[in-house]
Each structure stands twice: as structure tokens, then as C-alpha cells.
Amino acid sequence: MSKIAKHNKQNKHRQAYMRLWMLFAILIGCNILASQFHVGIDLTADKKFTLSSASVRLLKNLKDVVVVDVYLKGDFPSGFKKLSEATKEKLNSFQDVAGTKVVYRFINPFEGKAESEKEAIFKQLADKGINGVNLQVNGKGAEGYSEKIIFPYALVSYNGKSFSVKLLESHLGMSPLEVLNYSESQLEYKFVKAIHTLELPDVPSVAYIVGHEESLGLQTLDLLHSLEANYNLDTLDITSTYFIPNSYDAIVINKPKTAFEDKDKFKIDQYVMHGGHVLWMVDMLQTPMDSLQKTQQFVTIDYPLNLDDLFFKFGFRINANLIEDMQCNQIPVTVGMNGDQPQIELRNWIYFPVMIPESKHPIVNNMDAIMGMFVNSIDTVENSAIAKTVLLSSSKYSRVAASPMRVSLTMLKYPQRTALFNQPNQPIAVLLEGNFNSLFANRLAASFLHIYQDSLHRTFKSATDKATSMIVVSDGDIAENDFSKARGPMEMGYWRYSDTRYANKTFVLNCIEYLVDQSKLMEARTKESRLRLLDAGRVSDEKMQWQLVNIVIPILLILIFASAYTFIRKRKFEVKSN
Image 1: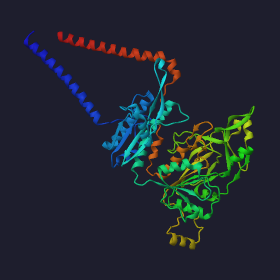
Image 2: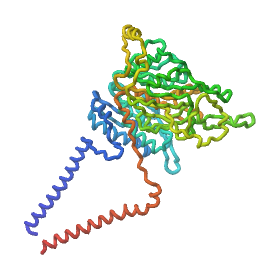
Image 3: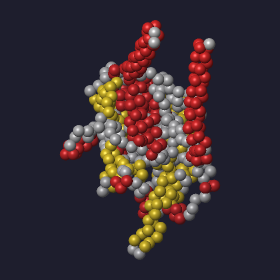
Image 4: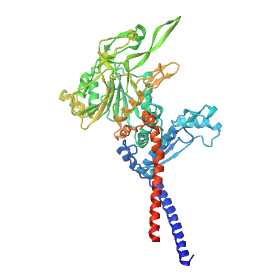
């Protein structure tokens, strides 16, 4: 081989090595840049990876570092690994907006801990609001399955405080796969809500109105404890105060039973006119369950609330009727005797409707079923200044029965005819937003207005200056909890006869949150992460076809590429030799 040929060969080797090293350098550089800069384009139809405008605004204005400890680390089934990865992706998207002001870490609380230390760890986590979930993990071969405790929670720390976030949701109407998918869709809302709660300098104030025999006692323990955990809660006797202070961000009027005098309606009216928010949970009819248990029947009687004119002025009316719904809860009834022992069965009770929210409003979007008891229907009044959104309604197999009416357990002996339930989708909970007018406009004497302003330093308003909101629910039992001597007070929405937990508590707390929170963070709740499942029928019918496509086509492409490369190379060297 000549020196020139040898030199050319060495140059080619050097160039090849140089190209190889340049390729390695480019790959390493790309990895370094990718680790420092997290950039992506959201091409999903439901914008799964795009933060809401309210979330972006919150993250951009962080004044301190948010530290998120996620307790989903370890050897989990694939569903929980997916939830863990989704949590990591969501926190990465937070970092894209907030930069170094969001820090997260994944923790296995039992890693490196002795068995004797586990009980103390359980207690420490429980004190932070983090409770373990008992998970059954399938084993291999004869091992069957094993039980494992996991903690699907995160602890958000900010501004010297901490807030626990439950990552795994529960939903009666969803399969386990759908529950995990739904949980992923709620991650953004839960994290931004936690940060917003910790960021607030003052906790919002809520007043629970009393004075007209409102529900108060064992049946409202869970409601009051839940409100107290999230807000500054006061009980306010409206009959012994001159006005409702607008320092309260919202007031709750829950199942009053006696008449409101005009002076009490005036106080509520002016609270609203000054921008206040109200959650009404009202029964229009007396439905004594104790009479039903003793005599197996009762006749409905109107509560003399004297609120119709105020309701009408605000844009709605609660009717003196009962909704009968075939989509309902069950109650235990005695159907016979077996010797000395009564035979008890659960039978559908059409007066206890089960409401499955269909609205896409943030308050109820993707929410689980909610149970009601002796529910009235709501009509709305035409008023262009007030927007009405139906949050809850009866099913398509429902009807209304006007009061007075006899309610009897004997009807459980006879099957219900679906064709008779022909008044579907009766409104049960309605959100009203806009500018309200006062019931007392042009009705008050000048002397009263003079005293009202001089003595109480209050200004009478005939209409709201800016938009406000209220929510009306035609069921005074929706926020009540059951209780027993053995178990004590239970959770709102728990139905002990079927051991079912309905979403009453979530619904009520969401209503309050929407009324008091002006940051609009609840819009993140409307996100849906839809499952794109394969068509099982097509998978079975076209299995061989798609297997061939996935196996044969790649091989054909490689052969075509190899043939073309060989042909081009052969032509190239043939030209040179000629």
C-alpha cells in the first residue's frame, strides 16, 4: 500500500472517530439541556398537560418556596405507579411556571426503618392528616396475595404551614381504572388549592345562622367540624343582632323551621345587597321520620317560613312538593316473620333520591352521587341580570307530588311503574350569580332609613353594586350526618344500611368554597382526563391483522432500505471504476 493511500486511510479513520465523538458530545449536551429546561407542547384533546389560567397566576406570584413531599414511592401495582408518574409530571409543570419556588421529593416513609418504628411513623403521618390505605397485592404462584400499606398523599408546605393532599379519589360509579384516571385529572386542582389555602393571610369567615330552629346538634357535627377546619366559623343568632356583618364571606342557612319576620329577612336582604354570599339548604315541608317509624305513615305539612317573597325577589321559588324518583336510596323494611325474628329487606324508597351530577360546573363536575331526603323542586324566575346554573337535579325517571300528601310505607309492597315517572330532571340545587335587587326597595319609611344610617352606620342598598352569588338547595337534610350510640356521629352522606358513602360532604364544602373564593381556582376541577380504551370487539376480530402489520411492515421497510442502500452504493462504485 502506497504512503498516500495509507495516509488517506488514516484520515478517514480519524474523521470517523471525530464524528463518533461529536455524536456523543451532542447527545450529552442534549441530555444536559433537557434536564435543565422542561419544555413541552400539549397536543392532547382535553389539554391534560396545560395548567389553567388561575393556576398559572397563582404559581407566578409565589412569594416563598413551596415544598411538596409525595408519599408514593416504592414497589406498587402499575395503577399506583401511573398515579405517581402523573403526580411527578404535574409538579414538573408547576416548576415550569414557578421555577425554583416549587420543590418536590418522593418519599417512602418506611424506607430504612425497623419494624418497631412503623407504629410511630403511622402516628406521625396521621397527625398530619395522612392515613394509610390497605392494598392487596397479587403474589406469584402459591403466594396468593399479600397486603401492603400505602400512603396516596402529598404534604404541601408553604409559608410556615402545611396541608395534606389526598391523591387517590373514591367514586361509586367508576371502575378502579377510571378512579385512578379521575384522580389524575384532579391533581392540579388539589395542589393549587393547598397552596392557595396556605398562602391566605386570613382564613375566610363563615357564619352559621340560627334563630329559627335551624339544624344544630348531633346531626350537624360533621358539617360544623368540617367548616371549622377550613374557615373561621361563627354561629350567629339573626334574631338578636341588628345586621349581618359583611366581614362574613358567606352565611349558611340550614333547615329553618319557624317563620322569618320582616326584620330578619331585611338583615339577609341587606347582607346580600352589600355583596354577601348565601348557601340556602331549605325544606318546605315537614316530613317526620319518627311518625313513619311508629305509624308507617304521615301527612306532609308546610313549614311556615315566610320566605317566598324574598326567594322570588332573588330569582327562585322552592315548591311545596316532594320529588319521587326511581333512582333512589334504600331503606330497611319488615317483609315478614321467621318465627319470632322479623325478616328485613332493603327496598327502594322513592322519596330519598340519589342525584348524579351532570353539570360541568366546577362545583359538581365529575362528582360522585349525592343522596337526598324528602326533596322539593325548585323553579327559577326570569331575570336577565341573574345567571342560573342547575347543579343537581332528579333523574329522568322522576315526578313531583304536591302537598299535602300522605307518605306511607305500604307503597313499598307494590312495584312502581316507570311510565308514571314522567317529570324528569327536576332542579334540586341551583347556583344564582349576578346583580340582585332588594325586596325592601321603595318600601321603607324615611324615618327608619334615617335611624338605620345614623344609629347603625349602615347604608340601605336597593340593589347590589357588583355581582354576587348564592346557592339554593331544596333539601335541608343534605348536610346532616347520621349517628348511633355505638359509632357516634358519622360523616355527611354516609348511609349505614348499605354501608355507602355519598358525596354530600364534598358537595357542601365545594359550595362554600365557590362562594367565598374569588380566585377562580375551582376551574381546575373541570379538567377531564378521558380514558382512550381499545374497542374489545375490534381487538378480538382484527388481532391477526394488526399483529401482521406490526411485525411484517417493519421487516419490509428494513429490507427495502437495505436494498436501496446496496443499489446506490453499487452504482456509486461502478461509476468510479469506470
